[in-house]
Length: 319
Ligand code: RIB
Image (cartoon, rainbow, N blue to C red; front, side, top):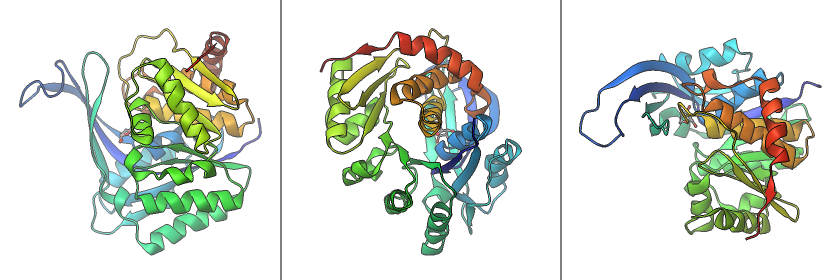
């Protein structure tokens, strides 16, 4: 396998994660346990995966000039991610996610974006120069937990350079739909897809309709990540459901990032979008079997093995 280049641009956070024994919100003060401090954020998580899958991984984004920056970046550096393109926002905190994981594994996150939202012209220009100067073949994996104007300019610069962009539209209100046709692929979860199409999605057929609508609006490949761990994929004239694996979830944190990261890696490696989506589903399903985001990510071999079985069970969805 040739070593390819993945650029990950978006949120870089210090994650503070705990387990709770009751549903978050059920009382004013909840007892928690199993505190862990991790590197997190969507761009960090996909950058970690790109390095773990053996590719050149370049992280772009913003941290603060505080001690939390090392919590966010240290484990990535150790994993081989290039973090020189991460800028420091003077006087600001690094982004922080406070994550509660209840017994049903469905995490709840409170995110303080902090430095992720601090992009002046110099920071934006430096980031665009990294994209513009990047060796190809490469892929840009982008999320919307940074300002919309930065997202827009990154997508446009990558397109001019011939670098495909795979977009995770979190937060969907920071994404402008006129950019859909400049992407290679978009990977919303159900609620993000609802935000993009402006209506609720209650069934697989409705997810398929939404995927086709986003495709008609310009995105060549649309993958809607479903809450059961599977996905609906619209590509060319086909809409497929890729089923979830048979796993016991302990923590869903970072599963969506595992999907997007591995899906983008597989596309860049030249895999068919159907196979790439099955790789994404497998990576996400394996990720929910461990606690935390990056520590729960599995190997290429494990992902490949599960993906083959999932693809064999994929079905066409009529909308
Ligand atoms: O998608 C999961 C990530 O997003 C976590 O690492 C956390 O930082 C949140 O913002």
